[in-house]
Image (cartoon, rainbow, N blue to C red; front, side, top):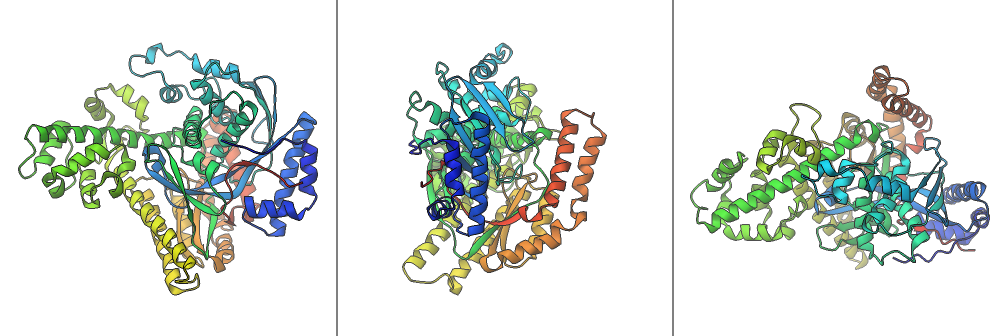
Length: 616
């Protein structure tokens, strides 16, 4: 990994940003934000200058790097990175800036212009020692003491959940886990005014993780291993497990690697994570609209997210058991007769197949390919398994619709408590792990992802060759088809993976009636946050005005959310985390509705995280 930026005195950085230089505007407008509007660029320069001036007030004339990391937009696929599947996303022009100065000790001296995030000073060494020395003896018989399990059992050990500093610490904890003898230097870090939506499904949290790693790297590059970029992306995905959310590496990969004005297809299915930049369609704008229903990880968001990871993990293990059982039966000469496959899974696992299985019962060669190529649910794709989609549909029918913790414990040879610890405990007594629809979700995502890639590349090739123009009806057919596919993705998230909520459904229902609508879906982990709406370019401003009138300026749209928060206040003790969280979210809702233009806007696809190299 190479970073060419040189540190400068903070007031010199401020002077350059405030100079009004055409070279600075050209750099920011073309290479960073992909927006050359003078008023827009003036706002960016102002807040970037404010960041370094705040830093100067704190640390004085110390050499300083000015970094920024954008929010991530899952305008297309979701969750595939968590199960070795290929994921498609991009980066928005909304970002988080931070001024960084290297320290000689191991201290992180942290400040944030957002009043919700209090300043804090922590020792990297002490935080890692506390986490690494948390008692493990009672877990040793069931779980290996590795980063995955320790961060699952002891996330943010000794620290409050959802503390913003946990995200800053996470790369330091992950690097030290593999390299515990490193004497990492700390940094003074001043986070400036952010334009990435907060707690809204655009992964502002992962942007902080990436920024923290860049600060770690700049402060310690002489003593760090020479990681390839793919290894860094994988490591940053795992680093965020420290905060208690066990996700994949797609957000961090996209935030770190996306070129300006591109969509990134991240190939998590490959042994070494690779990324393919794709051109986006011309004549299409993306309107990012905040539902204002906040995803609050301190108030249960992590449980919902980790539960779905549990569905994937358990489904993968059950699939591997089924594959092994089928291959064993074939080798013993028992795989014959009508219905032999359904009978096998019923006898060995108690699962009732979801339909007839004529292809998989008659094609033993397909099982050889499945055994060879299957890794996780992200493998449920024709070009990975090397079997047709019709056979994959039958493979999914072998899985149970839902499995309860006691049933899973019996099949997987673990006790119920261990099952609930590893795969997350369901919230309700009747709750279980939804396996078949989860597998179907990933199969549908893979199918649509491959089709989107073909459309983007084909449309670009035909325009560049002169075969058609962006104004032609044939090109417009690409826009319409992409919008339809995005709507299909939203359907899969609602019904197969169950991550939407009524507030998101309401916002998208309103948007579908709006001017220029092509397609729309939630973005991020779900259960709240933002939606991305594909709109014809000429009508994107009209869509924003339409959403103002039909959604944001209608108080009744937010009655249910207000009632939920007021109930949280009524039934929680003042000063408790639940009470403080509800009060904070009410304040955020009121502030958002007082500033509607910031809640929906046309976005550009900015460059990924970087240290700014401002022309002098």
